[in-house]
Image: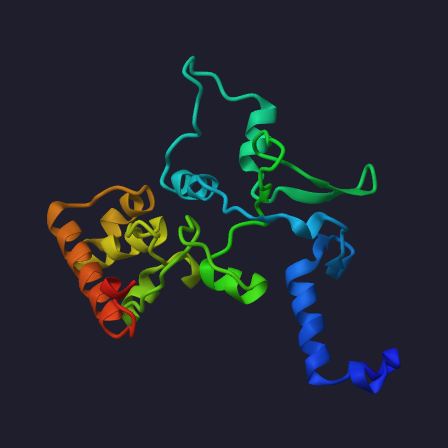
Length: 228
């Protein structure tokens, strides 16, 4: 910062907090500068979380096919591109300008909501200073048993619970694999990665473990569901 020859008032903690908050919450991503850029009017749009797109990755991981139209044909290239776009804005190199994309038609007086990408409520609070009452991309992480991590081929960020209470594909697969007797794991590993239920007994063991862990985690929280 001294190399920039900034005045003393701009080197204070208060100035740094303002600059850090401005970059985190107001700048747009550009490929040539990690600090981003300021785009007039662009930072007026409030956030709308992507709805169903994030589940596509898990569906593909579970061996499920891409969605088809009623006539069995793939959606048009334009529709697929729109569905796959998790961020409703981006710098277009061909025209040297920043573009914003609306997912629906807006009328005069409507609030325009755009997706900045997939964020949990914790990330939204950290970067933008707000929370969503309902966030389809929110995640709850619970500690696993030490031996579970050794069985898992996914990174820890993939092991979470969705807002509706369902475990992620990675977490569910790990629990299913762990619930199987050690002597049988080698023969069922291909079924685990395909997203298949291995047996009623192992499924009950996995779900009971998950329920117990969730209850334990909730009991130590200061705010209960009844108080919300």
